Length: 310
DNA sequence: TAAAGACGCTAGTATGGGTA
DNA sequence: TACCCATACTAGCGTCTTTA
Image 1: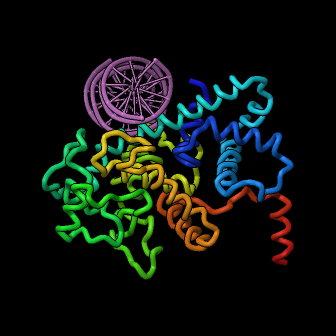
Image 2: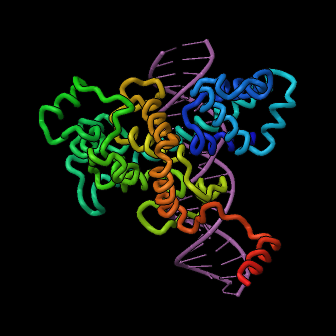
Image 3: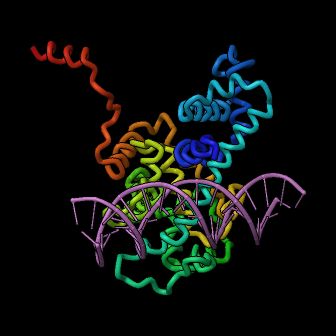
């Protein structure tokens, strides 16, 4: 397997899961080439966001920038994009498959039976068709205990778009209208989904007994990224839903809008304080030994510190 | 009909038990 | 103690199915 497929897997999980790699790379090349002299404000907000993802891609794949910039044919660039896309798609598909069954075990406390039971392989009895998954997927601020609401959600008379966030994103599954950040993206089921994907399925409920490295270790991941949280949330939401096919353009699950809406908030400069607190919280949950901005102390800086103390 | 997605299967790795 | 083998666990590849 080409290493680019391997890097594509990690790119999809941690930088951007639902983008078109061909367009991303082609636009990135143009931006770095013929449009490099143009001022920042000549680009739309969407173009600026896309370019940030492109830069993150170049940073995450060693030698990619040189490979792209020295490629002498569009076909080669197309091939690079195809390999990265293949990696991102197959990782997404593998995670979907894996979470499909695992998430059933997280709906009720260990030892407690799920009533009625949910099939591990067929999704038709999930989503709003089941009391438990329905309650978790019910949009924040909407009362799942209201029978009329429940019926409307089940019959799709009340449709839920991707930017209406489900209650399972909130800690203790409660939403505070006065403080929308309260518990946001800190729920137990979301942390479990994240661990399942990034640190190994067996690390979710017990001391990890995996004999192989999890994805985080394989890819040298030492801290969570905004996109990795959005990715775990999107995967969990899809696993809870009754949809059997993950499609970014699917109007029923609206996964792409959901993913982008989370990313948008997490990348909003106005929300920086809350987001930084959230990332620190996540790093404590997932990577307890993680030290923000840690870097080896050089001999010179160590000497400088000693001198400063004196 | 091509692309996207689901799923069966395989390979890699660690662990624990049995045996010499 | 060292070796072998069965087993558990996981990532990812290959193929089949579905969809637009």
